[in-house]
Length: 135
Image 1: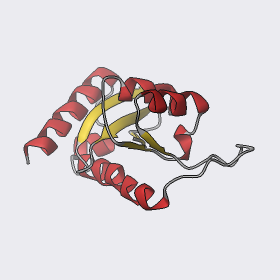
Image 2 (image 1 turned 45 degrees about the horizontal axis):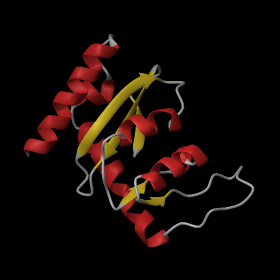
Image 3 (image 1 turned 90 degrees about the vertical axis):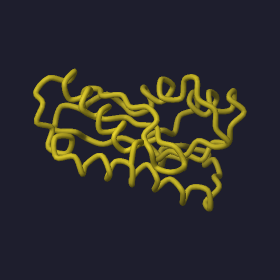
């Protein structure tokens, strides 16, 4: 899971597969926290592991992932009193979400966020994601 800022007022939250292809994306206001969208991104998904960055470190999300019978690979936030160990080797694969965002940014309309309305931007983001799947 990851996120990218598409302008100053929106943020794109995305779930990608192992090959770095977008599976699900949600566009929110820029100030919305990352963890608030994580459950919606994971809804109905199955995987052997969920990899995410420190912004997704929360007990609620870890419990949701454990309920899915999936391994959690999320580094602990600095503010956490007890550091939860993670699989460092598995965490190296998290760059697939970053590569996915970079592929989306090859679409100028996505990268520069020409669309003023969130609905239009989100529609184009889905269209760009479909194009990535078709390549």
